[in-house]
Length: 327
Image 1 (cartoon, rainbow, N blue to C red):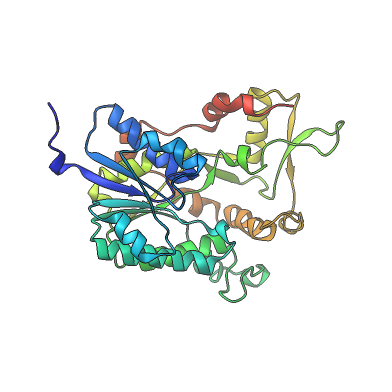
Image 2: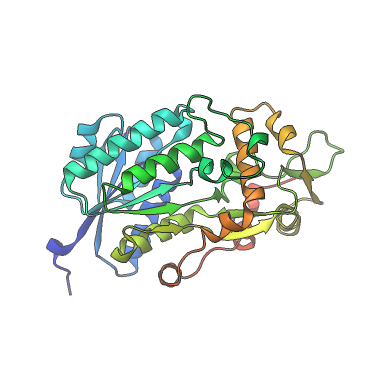
């Protein structure tokens, strides 16, 4: 029986051509294909004519140009929507200040449009934890103006609290994408031909929380299907493994003779020289020193897990993507 379109809910997806936004669009498309016609998906992008936007359009019902630096364009993009998936990009300008301004703009637009439910992809403000730690003085401040240790975490965390105080919001804590091993150069590599392949992290024996983009998408869908998540913080995590275990899985499933785990001190990782190295070094230190708290805050609730059909283990993800990695 055809569903009455008047009760369907339109969800705007910010950054639909990006990694998280694209995963959300595809998860909703899968939901629709499985017979759930509750949602209409409106993809939003700064550049709807881009190659990435064109690639995601077939998975959406509607597509619009919208720029989070322009409040009125966001109000227009949210017009007629029940809810929105919101994600912001620190790395667009490497600026927590700009990212926080962007989040405030989206908040104002969400209020003007009268959105009933926003799922906000965010991270915690590490300052709250670190400033209460006994070793606070040993932490390097990365953003002196804002006193931030991990700016792409801290800005999101502060802005999310402000956002959720004025808009009906589910805050969704994410973690490191499994896809980072593909897109951000974190997979096995070696300096010279006679060196062993290795992954390099300053994590010791602590577990690294990982999430597949697919699971982020499914978790967002689960949140929108459950209005009881409004006013709560949920987690998106697929698996948590030591770096040694991750190295062993690369060796087991991919075309590498062997993969070792190169465990380096935080300050050595910070000195590697790529853009954002010092900040990522602090991020990994935060993962390591507050491991239990970080991982437990990202464990999905049972209702969501049931809707998602469980989460994707890193070993399964690796087997699906093994051809991307080669010696």
